[in-house]
Amino acid sequence: MKIRTLTAVAAMLIAPGFAMSDPDDDTLVVNGEIEMVTKTEAPDHMSDTYVDTIMSGWHFRSDETQSLQMDDFDNSGMVFVDIGRDQWNTAEGGEGKSCASCHGTPEESMEGVRATYPKWDAEAEEVQTLAMQVNDCRESRMEAEPYGYTSGEMANIEALIAVQSRGMPVNVAIDGPVSETWERGKELYYTRTGQLELSCANCHEDNYGNMIRADHLSQGQINGFPVYRLKNAKLNTVHARFKGCVRDTRAETYKPGSPEFVALELYVASRGNGLSVEGPSVRN
Amino acid sequence: MAQGVRPRVKVPRKAEAGEIITIKTLISHKMESGQRKDSDGNVIPRSIIHRFTCDFNGQNVVDFKMEPAISTNPYFEFEATVPESGEFKFTWHDDDGSVYETAKKIEVA
Image (cartoon, rainbow over all chains, first blue to last red; front, top):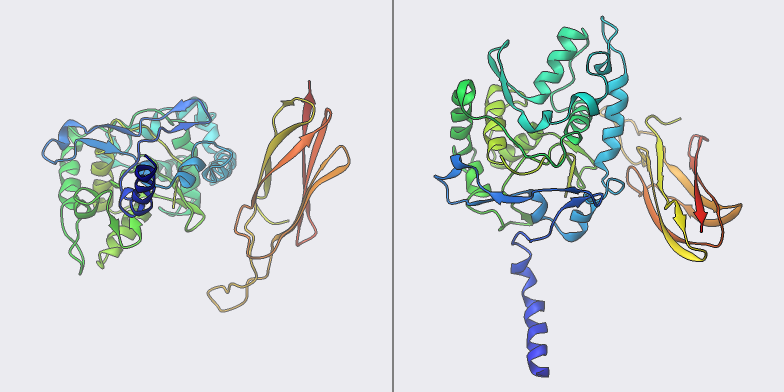
């Protein structure tokens, strides 16, 4: 019996190198009340892949990092939500309006919004991301300068809007008028880029759960954006992350806000259909 | 005053007499170390919070001296014994002379 225990202990000592790479089975509950869906069945459109369970990036992080997201006080992303709220209430531009002038409080008007973006804008006849919508409002309704697409201000506002949908399932439409953009996004997802000739799928579909040098590959889900990253102590937007990933394949990247990244955002978001909106999440 | 500074603290509203409670504090602050340079090569002057204290009914609980290596938005978590009802007072001292204060009441049943 004793020897057995010892063997078990020894096995545990050796195992972490492998065990750590696999996503865990923890449950994410924020503030002890918002229960998050962090693992669920893959949406139908992914039936041509061998991914049958989609998982939030939360599962791929250490317990310490995970716990930071379980309490809003520990979640440094919430600091930026507060700054976003100040921005929301600040009148800017020629019209002298703030977000609040039209939309009231974000609690009233922004519930569920994050979960459906990017989506088709019938007036502009294009797929719009949340960031594009924010800047559209700023330019046409407030007559204010648009935010930089991946700027801190944009991330703050996105975080403020995302937090109103926390716990709600991502539900991005992929059919109808957006289907063309969605197909383009899908193509980009599977297109190898850069000197390393890597596509999104090579890492995030074929190798999630494995290590890429010191980094732990997740499924590349974007339900937790904007993300507070411990490595740069700020909120990071989806397109900034895309840019970082494409750069890491040693390619010239598309620009944040470009039609390519908008299409890719739509496709990647749709791969997370069913997961809870987590933004602002905490990752390393 | 540095921009965007906002203190926040988490203290339980109620406690038993003599109970050990956990207090969490976070202040949003850029904590500029004084080691960095801007794009023109000029040193960005140091601007940090260099001291943080917590008092309970006039009695000191913790007194932190803080150094430039502490990263942005400093977070402190510590424990305190609560003998009676009263008020926790939190004070942050900025390099520029600003003092940020906040207080939280606690009721001992």
